[in-house]
Amino acid sequence: MSLPVWARSYEVLHYLGCGSFGQVAKCSKKDTNEMVAIKILKNHPFFARQGQIEGQSHRLRLG
Image (tube, rainbow, N blue to C red; front, side, top):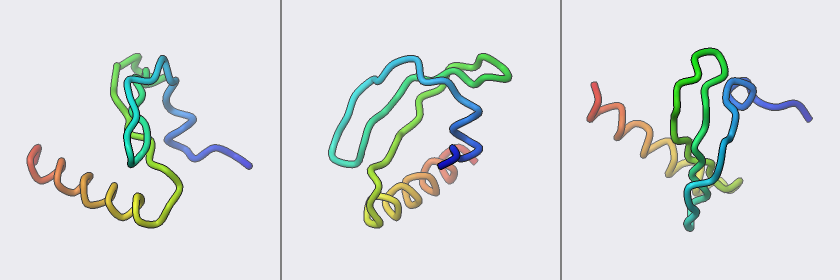
């Protein structure tokens, strides 16, 4: 099994926390060394859909 493209672009430094949807990890973007937090969702259709909704919500607030 190969990793998705986004997973090859970041290095997990440590986990910040976990909850019912999954975990949040502090990561370093490999090409720029930018520090980011990435939410890693559990592998379940409900969590995947909820993650899409959250992503859209964040983009609306930022854009």
